[in-house]
Image 1: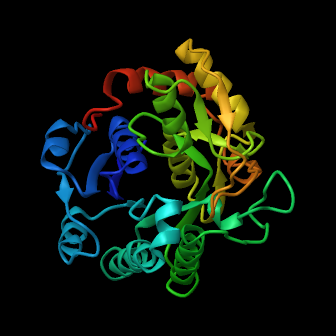
Image 2: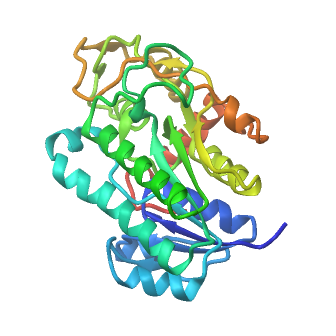
Length: 315
């Protein structure tokens, strides 16, 4: 296996930290770029670390990092992570997602044009699909500012691939979860089961809404698979299985050994799609296979949650 030099933007976040740790554990040199609180940075432990590069993009210091590190792979994870916040502050979400993506791509074009770039996008670009499972060629119909801005970032990636000859791949991640996730539905349900003051588990929707869950470790494996196959284009990264929120809640309750009653409000929040299930034929053709099933992945997450879920981020 050839040793790579992997630059990860947004490495202070949930997915970015997993991806940096994964590639370092394979023996590749990693340069994590992101926002790291002082207490967080002291706790982070990446294998084969070049150096921790603390900054908020766009930042001219990023150009210095790229020139010095000479990456062979850049994984662009930087951007926002909240659908609800994007609806409330769409322009800020645009700045933190689309403008940052353009800055990162232009930096790579001018300073490391032969470096492969993998852009993390989201299933949110599909919105409410007309049919399941969702193939990469399905119409893009976002229902949130977050989804629109991911779609715009994908367009930028395609521009740099087609017009500037860069090796760019886009991955549309479905419902990613895993250790260090402190938001979204899996964390919310765990928090309510663990809260002794909560007599019931109250959740938005009807319970029939579904998601296609994928552990962060498998997201990293998918990126590695794309890079090793020298692939470009767009790929769904998911399990290929839809799980209803009602079933998800039952699995988590069982793992907590907790029988609190579950109540669904019937309210659908703005920006939330109804049902997701990915077609993963494209990435499977490269040899990708999910490594962690949902119950095993949730067991890992709950073990982390019980020991560190309300403390500082650790690796």
